[in-house]
Structures are given as C-alpha cells and as structure tokens.
Image (cartoon, rainbow, N blue to C red; front, side, top):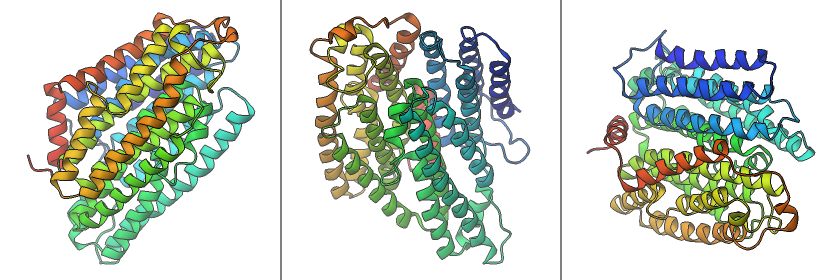
Length: 478
C-alpha cells in the first residue's frame, strides 16, 4: 500500500492546489507534499521489503535509485517554487502547482510498476501534465515549444506502445502466454521469438529515447527547456528523463535474459556516443544559457546510454550518474532561472556579470557548470570516471577515446558561454531590475549542490548498498 500512498499524496496535493484560492499561499502545498513524498520514498528505498500491491505495483533496485532522484529533486524544487512564484503573482499559479504535483504522481507510477502497459500509461501522463508547465509564460515561443514537445513526444510514446506490443507478440508467436509483466517476460525471455523481440526493443529505444532526449530524437529539448520556467526545466531534465532511462534499463534486461544483451549493447553505445556528438556540436557557440543546459541534458542522456551499453562497472557508473546528473541539473536550471529573472533575458551578451548582479546564484551557476562537466571534487566526476574505467576494462577502447574527446569539446563549448555569463559587468538595465536572491530561491540550490559535492567526496553506505543491489539485479558481478 505504500506505493499507492506515494501516488495518492500527489493526487490529494493536486486537488488542494485546485481548490485553494490564494496564489500566494497555494505554492506552500508543494513543499508539504514534497516532504511527505520524500518520507514515503525513503521508506520504500530503505525500509522493510514491501510486497507487490494488486499485482502491478512493485519497484526494482534501479527504480529505487530513480525514485530517490525524483523525490529529492522535487523536494528542493518545491521550496524554490515558494520564492519563485512570489515574483510571478501577476499570473495565476493554479495550473502550474496542479501539474507539478500530477507530474510527480505520474513519475512515481512509472517507477513503482513492473508492467509495460502501466508504464506506458504513466509515461503518457507525464507528457500531458508537462505541457501546461512549458506554456506557463504564455508567450509565442512558449506556445511553439509546447506544441513541439507534445507532437514529438507523442510520436515517441506511440512508438513505445508499438514496441511493447511487439515484445508481447514475441511470446504469442511462440505459443506462450502473452504478458506485459516484466518478471514474466524475463522468465519467458529464452523462448521468445528473437526477430519480434529485437523489433520491439528498437521501437522502445526510439520511443523512450525520445522522452530521454537521445539524439536525433532530442529536437524538443532546446525549445522546451529554453522557454519553460527554470524549476520546470530542472524537474524534467533531472526527473522525467531519468524515468525514461529506467524504462530502457528494464527493457534491456528482458533482452539480456533472452540472450540479446550484446546486440542491445552495441545499439546503446552507438546512441550514447551519437547524443554526445550532437551535444558537442550544438554547444559550440551557443548563446542562450537555458538552451545550453538543454544540450547538456542531451549529452548526459548519451552518457547514461553509453554506460548501460558497456555494462559492468560502467553500468554502476551510469546508475550513479542518474543521481549526479539529476541533482546537478537542478542546481543549474534553478540558478539559471534566477539569472533569467534578474536580467529579464537568458541570452549572451545581455547576460554578463552574473556573479556581481546575483552573488549567490551566479556562483552556484558557475559551480554547477564545474560539476556537470565532470570536474572533481563533484559527483559527476566519480560516475563519469567509472564509465570510462568500465569502457577500458571491457575492451571498448574506441568508445573510451571518443568519450574523453567529446567531454573535452563539451567542456570548452559550455565553458565559453558560462564564463561569459558569470564574469564581466552587468548591464545598466540588469542592475535596476527588482529581482534579488532570497532564502527560498537560494537555499534549495545550495543544499542540492552540497549533496553533489558529498557524493563526489565519498558515497554514503546506504547509497552504496542500493547501487550494489541494482548492479546485482542487472547481472554485474561484484
């Protein structure tokens, strides 16, 4: 029942957001729901074992990692939202608060089920609940971004549905009882029809890869992240994409149980490096700080796919990178949102001297850049090093060299824009805007960055145990 409780608290919070009249008090519902959801998530992850509920609600070890990221990131965003929305009282936040809570509930359902059909329904629900969030600013560009997000992701999710049917059909054609339950499919995997099983994986890779933002299915990301509020971009980049990656992990496990692991790994390695290449090309000369973060998300989804494809210690690194990327993207998007609000622009050269204009947010944005590019002593350095080490250990030397080269190019391209934004002198217009850092909009970012730093210095034992469980579940030998 605890899975139902984690989903139900989001529904109750959403209903409360709809009936609350005050735009000033309504955002307070978010941290209340966030705190309760986080407490339930901790119980699910580290509490006593919980039996499946109603046959479809169950969480696997990789799901525990994604649940931790989603719940922790939402908790930070929920406190940030209280301060952010006080600057946006000219526009009603009823729909935003409601959709944020529905998005959290849909993500929780994606994570806490082992049924391909229910996962698909929940993932489609994330698309529908995200669209109004992208349109919050109600500009021509935000409307265009919303439609692009809906159209591209709807095509992707339709392909994922077809892929799910094809995997079920791979059992039916062999005279087996068709099922969309992942444990059942894993048990039947050695007897499934290889052709239809592979076809199903390709459609699922394209479908859920679209939700992840893997290249070349990433085209919705720059516009969506560029036009959505920073808090929305943070939750989508750190949470929604992690959920899509979790679904690929689960499907890949079915294929691996059917003896198709090497074939899927080659596809994942190719998609991972291709995504990093696209990100590297489009980051060079990028002048919009939020679109820059969108391409950074494309890069890191590629890193996750690469780690999953290589396997072994690289897979453990990818699972750890889900946490590091999710939290660091929270730091970057939230601090970029503060900068955007202060400058009333997100483009270079209008944005310069951010450390002088917003000492806290400007510094956090700079530190977030250092972290996300894999520099020590932050968490992404550890997870990316594990992926590199795994590539070499398993003989993927070309992938290892390409990985390092692309990371270097991305560091240069991203660094040029970030350093221009944070250094120099702010314009006269920027110095006279009313926005200033406050405890609500700064403290959650500081806390999130401290977590990224802690993981870079040492991995706490409870987290290490969950990572080890996930690795064992995925067949990684200790």
